[in-house]
Each structure stands twice: as C-alpha cells, then as structure tokens.
Length: 216
Image (cartoon, rainbow, N blue to C red; front, top):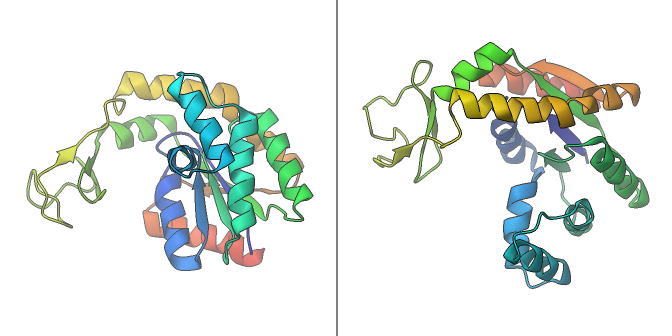
C-alpha cells in the first residue's frame, strides 16, 4: 500500500492525476473539500463537529481535518491514499506525519507537479468543464468538438469557474507560494520529494508518476 502526496500550485493537474491513480491503482483520493462535504452528512461525532463549525461560518481547524483523515485511514484502502490539497502548511505536514507514524503507516512519496507560471495562467484561463459529467476542455488545446456541447455526454452545460481568470489565479498562486511551497524543501529534506513536469501531456505525467510509485 502506498500513501502519497500530490503537491503543486492550483491548476497543475493534481485532481486529474489523482483520478487516474484511483482508477488504475485502486487508491483512495483524500480531498479536503470532499471530506468536509461528506462529513457534514455522515452522522459521526467528527461529522457533527464539522457541521457545527461550518454552520457558524468558522474555518475548520487543522485538528478536525486530521481527525477526518484518521477516520479515512482507519477504513483502509487496498492501493493506498492520495493526499490532494493537504497538507498546505508546514504545521499540517508535521501533524500528518505524526498521524501516519502513530498508525504505523508511512509516506511513500511526495510528487511535486512543476509548472511554469505563465503557461499555467494560459492553461487555467482557457479551461472550462461540463457541469453534467465533469469533462474538462480548453479553448486552445482541447476545445469541444461541437461548440457548446460536451463530447462525452452531449450536455450543453459547459461552464467556467468564476475564479479561472488571470487576477484570481495570481492571487491563488501567491497564496500557494507563501504557505505551501515551503513543503517542497520540507519533503526534500526527508528524502520523499520527486518532481514531474506538470505541464506535459496528461499521459506523460501519468507515466512519470507511475515510475516514481513503481520504484517505491
């Protein structure tokens, strides 16, 4: 079983590669946002805490997120877990490491998806998705075959994220560089860091990640 972290700025393709690993290796993707949404309706003690915090408009604490991760780890996963969007800070990285150690589990690899900022802005500002099935398109590199119609399901509900514009993306990038990029050095020092070209073709990125995992 392999536990890994996918690290990289918004738009680097972490979600796409995580989905492939789920499909191909029976891994379980642990996305903070998904876990919080699931917890609200789970009926567990931790879920009730999440619901209370979110109902009052407060930010969910690191301790609660770690608690949710512990619940998921306890349930097990044949192929291992993919941490997507967590940790975001050095403090969270320490907490995750302590949790894994305490449960007798390790971290096989941290995969940094490297990108060029200018190319990333171009990638994100041209991106749109199908609101029905989630298929992803791009104005230049992967437009829908029929304008306004999803190739995969035929839906006409093609939409862009409100924050997929240059100004919003630069704000998100700044947040990443301030809080999350220090994790690159943190995991390098722990001999866990592996870097791949996040702007390569999706299949090439998947192959590069597979090489890292198969070595492990």
